[in-house]
Length: 234
Image (cartoon, rainbow, N blue to C red; front, side, top):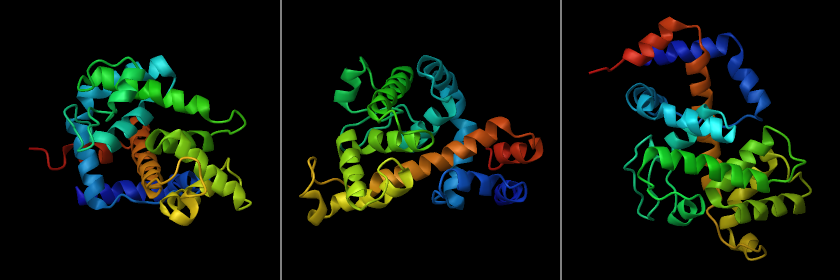
């Protein structure tokens, strides 16, 4: 699998796609190491097929790219319908009980309901983002709000504006989000303390997973794809 992963990385370096992606999206961090990447491809092969139709159905319902929804689902649960956290969130999209109720979800462990509910909730958050904010900043801010809560996102945007930077640019807001854990800052904000580094990491990882899924569904490099899909197969 190491050879296959290296072949993939060499490919995107050589044809310029990696640099174009970094330029377009303001240089999101490369947080996936070899172990992360190997595990991801294994789950693409072994787990994604059982959920792909649900992601595609949710995409048709909401207009959100199914690969983005799948990237969110992978970050949330590694595509496990039985996933449960110590805080009580559960399912493929790791919905809270209150979010599930808001979205009309009766069984968070049902993958179809979970994926549909997560997609619909992402749209709810997106509609709260000011209309003037364009893509791709709109999407990255939406994902951060989906993760940390819209109120905390707005607090980070207020901090950004206080610093004289644009609260409409993810590149600027992501630098202020970690300050939500600093009492000197959060005591001046409406929504108080939050672990602001978490949405920064969350968005970065989803962007990486999404990029890999876009490549997976569009590549003509069948040889590398075949090697990725068969490596370590039992």
